[in-house]
Amino acid sequence: MSKKHFIQELSQDWNFGVYPLLLEVTRKSFSIRPLRGPAFLISVRERAFASTVCTLAAFQAESMLQNIAYKKGKKDDSRHELVKLICNLKLQQAVLELFIMRDVIAHSHLHKTIINFKQDGDPKSSYSKKVRGYDSKDYKLLVVRNKTKLLQFNVAPSRIGFTDSVLALILSNRLAKELGITTKDFYIHKITEDGGYQSIKLTDYIKFLTQGLNNSHKNSLQRKLAFVNKV
Image 1 (cartoon, rainbow, N blue to C red):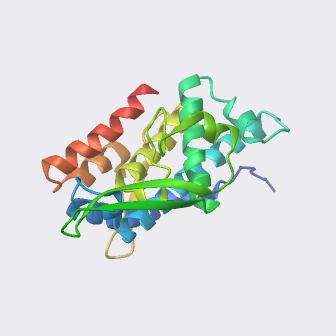
Image 2: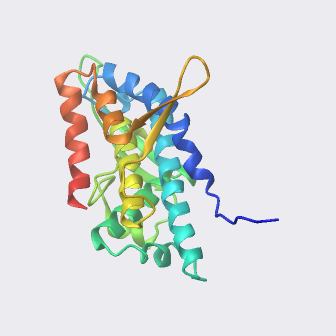
């Protein structure tokens, strides 16, 4: 009788169907909204689905770090000890920024949104300010005007959208490569009509997501994704 031992990470299962279902709904909402105007024009649907992707990507990143820490016999699994497993200092900061955004969502930080109106009653601009939620050292250090410093993740709940969710997933893949978990892109597995899966490399899946977007929305996504090149 033989035995095999392996460390199971539930987070890897999200590549099978979960991310595509969430991202494609988020993309649809993103593709039809104006890019100029108050931040509250991001629909409830886009915010909700994008926030879910960002949270799952952060859980996935933390799961990978926990896996490596376990294999290395590390006892301390605190956030800062986990990110020390990453040799690339900028990637350390990027992952901390992803964790900050996850905390904003998962720990229900409250923001007050102030809306300025034109004389004709149409909204002119809006501004969000955090009024409740813990001020961690990382938050104070890495967040300026509701955005993280390096990757420009939105941390005001009303501003989290499609571009944040795609960036979060790419960062999770970047971390997997850095940790040696994989040397290749993640494969995203779309559920087909017959209940099977269509496997698509992440870079090709991102291209798929940009199909049908007009130039303004494509440029908005590309500007956001360019921040990951800093890592």
